[in-house]
Length: 114
Image (cartoon, rainbow, N blue to C red; front, side):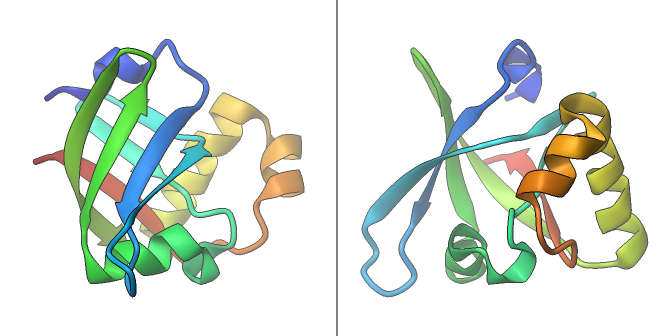
């Protein structure tokens, strides 16, 4: 599914499976859509709980009111790729808010339709 249906939203609900319990956990997250690509940036980088969960189970659900879709994740760890995602977030949400809420920039995620 093309992620462009998400573009009108500022925030989405990310649902992941807990790495120990297997229970579904849902949290609101920021995101960027660019063409066919959907990018997520963990707030605390590789220390973010949802990121640690998807390392164990790389299938996620993305939802907005009335719609939900399943995605597989591609882990971005190369400095240039992560910086590119950070730059996209700064453009969409503003450099000040990214600096205010995000504390570590060592990983990012690209979500692809499952």
